[in-house]
Image (cartoon, rainbow, N blue to C red):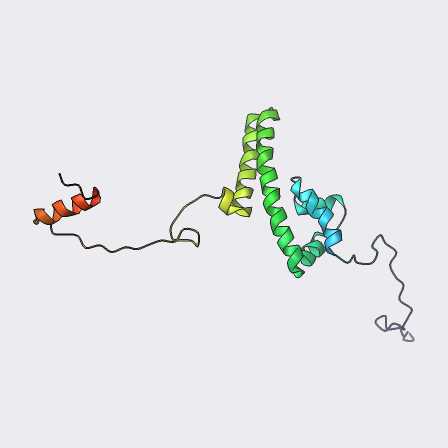
Length: 166
C-alpha cells in the first residue's frame, strides 16, 4: 500500500486562523468610574462576587484591577466595611420576617461569622492574649514590703487611701 502523507496540523499559515465567534468582546479597562457602581452595590449588602455574577463580569479581573490600584484598593476596603455594617443591619430584618426560627438563626450566625472575619475590630471576638497597637500591654514592677513589717504596710495602705491614716 502506498504511504499517504498527512499534513502537519501544527503548522499554520499566518492569517489563516479564524477568530472564534462568541459573546466576549475586548477586555474592559477598569477605572475608578467603572468600579464605583460595583462598589455602590456592595454598600447595599451584596458581595462583590454576587455583583459580578449579576452583571456577568469576571470577578477575577475586577479583583485584580482593584488591588492593582492603591486608590481603588482603599475605596474597596472602606466599601467592605460598609458592606459588613449593612449585613449586620440585615440580621434584624431576618429575625423579624423569617418564619423558620432555625433558618433565621443559621442565617444570622453566618452573617456574624462573616462580620467577625471581615471587620474583626467591630464584630470580632475580643480575646486578648497579647497587646495590640490600640491597647498595649504594660508590665510594672513594684517592690512589696515584707509581711513582718507592720509599719511599712500601714504606710502603703495610707498612700493608697490618699494619705489618710486609719
